[in-house]
Amino acid sequence: MNPYVLATLLSSLGLGTTLTFASSHWLLAWMGLEINTLAIVPLMAQHHHPRAVEATTKYFLTQATAAAVILFASTTNAWTTGEWDMTNMSNPTATAMILAALALKIGLAPMHFWMPEVLQGLDLLTGLILSTWQKLAPLALIIQTAQAFDPLLLSALGLMSTLVGGWGGLNQTQLRKILAYSSIAHMGWMIIVLQYAPQLTLLALLMYVLMTSAAFLTLKFSSATKINTLATTWSKSPVLTTTAALVLLSLGGLPPLTGFMPKWFILQELAKQGLPLTATVMALAALISLYFYLRLCYTMTLTISPNTTTSTTPWRTQATQNLLPLALSTVMALGLLPITPTIMTLVT
Image 1 (cartoon, rainbow, N blue to C red):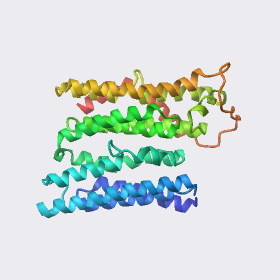
Image 2 (spheres, rainbow, N blue to C red):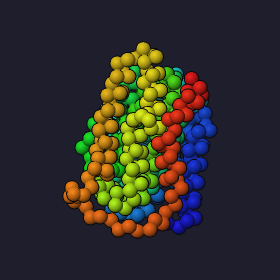
Image 3 (cartoon, rainbow, N blue to C red):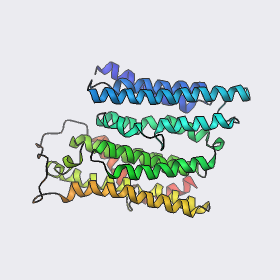
Image 4 (cartoon, helix red, strand yellow):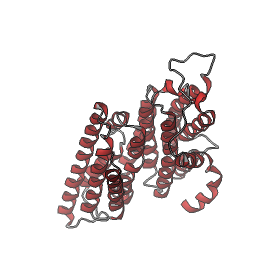
């Protein structure tokens, strides 16, 4: 892609998200979301592969539907209340519609069906943008309007997303689909605690972005898109294989890795709020997700010779990509648990 076009599209992505962050007016927020969607569509379709074009079409249709529902619901709310302000959401129908549309935008269950299909059709870097940056603007809107939403509905969305994210990933062999289900499960963790401690939602989002970036950049370096390709990465770069396995365990939420921190805080908050049953279900759902991360770790680290693999061993080619983002995100995805006391003072 032409570097000038790429720069324009990436700056438009940044502009759309920033516009949504800065707005307290529904029309401006909607414009930000639309700019965001229109900027990523050419990035998704840049390879002109039929699968990429199909994924782009699916993504565009779902996002356009969600944006139309947001516009309709905010207009209905403005009709009732006489103002477009986000903080004044007194119409229950409009509020429920906006939550459904924003859930569709970030891929919360049961509006998650587009997410694995779209991610499967994209290359890994565009998939990384879709899994991280594209979640920020809708989540910012959800956090800003959280007090207007029905608490039971938020809890149901959160629980369903963690369960679907766990169950859906069990049967997958494609790494991008596994990461899509992982994303759905993490979104569920963020939504479940939103009504009690929004700062924990932000912490979980930050940790999710770090860990997902490390996972996608590792796969990009290894050029791996299927589980059986992972079996031969040890011969190419043994150190990266070790750190990749640890990053996956961090995504699963195992101590002493970074991913344990947000899950620990969220379960603690749910117990504090008198919801031990919800906390138990969330912890069990995290175990289901952990199973498919462990599957990937097993394939990467324990299927070496003399076990036979179906894929050919890759050539040890010289790396041409910039490894600084990969190194930084991996270090942060693995080693931030010791600063938990500091974070605890900030979020409580």
